[in-house]
Amino acid sequence: MLVERGLQVMNVEVVGDAYAIASNYLRKAGAIPDSFATDERLLEIIVQMFQRGEFNRIRLANKAIAKFEAETFIA
Image (cartoon, rainbow, N blue to C red):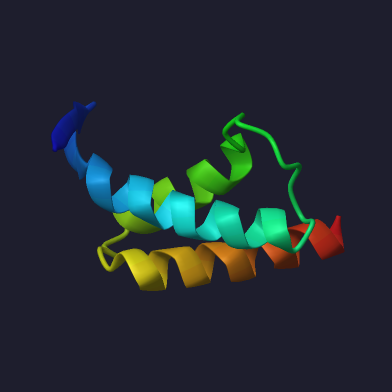
């Protein structure tokens, strides 16, 4: 499904799948709480990468996990 967001069109399915993969891993690793709530920081990382041109859901998830973990351990 394509959704307009401002002037850009976003493939919600790719972003959603990447988020599901990344959040599942991070929940199992204990980096985010095991809840039904969306982690806004993780979602924002994925959306930014998607907007920069990364459209592969696996690569999106892996890069988002790496960035999320790097930011978590720095902070």
